[in-house]
Each structure stands twice: as C-alpha cells, then as structure tokens.
Image 1: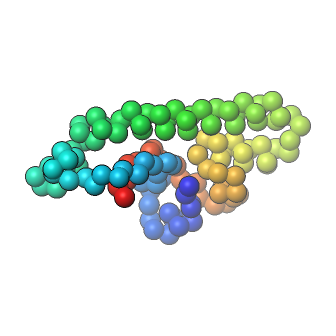
Image 2: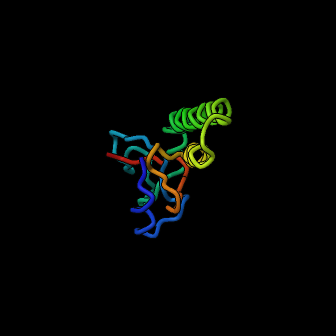
Length: 116
C-alpha cells in the first residue's frame, strides 16, 4: 500500500502517508455538502458521510496487526530473531511483507479519504 522510499524522497512525514483509503465515487463539492464556500473540506460532514467506513478500515487494520503479532508470539521461539523483529515492525507499522527492509525508513499513518 505504501512505498517508504518514495515517501521519504517526497519529504512526507509518517502521519502524511495513508495506510489505507476509501475511494469516493462522489466528488467533494459544495453541492454535496462536503466543501465549504471557501472550497475547504467540511470535517463534520466528511465524518458523518465516511466515519463508519473509516472505523471499519481502522478495525480491520488493527485486527490484522494483532493477528500477526499473535502469530509471532506462537512462532517466535522457533524463528530467527532478525526475521521476528522485522515482521513485528511490519505489523506495527502497517507494512506489507517486503515493504520494510533493515535500514530503510519506516512510515505509517492513519486512514485517509480520497476522491476518484
């Protein structure tokens, strides 16, 4: 879902990199009530429209992380320490297997809504 090297090259902070996202088929407009007269996002309207979906994504992310950490606890004594530490870091940072390498910067962030 994310590319730490690309994010670092772009100068992004960890909280600026989405871990997951929703694609809205309806553009954010004043008419839809999602933008103000100054064309700024109206957070209460966005929360009302997308909050439940975002909470589901957060729950799924948290569950996947917890499942991976439980698996590591079960298998940990039989696995090489560097591999176990790397997998734990990937789980906690929301990285996919292979996205995080030793020495590479790690980035994680909350879920974001994007329009299509």
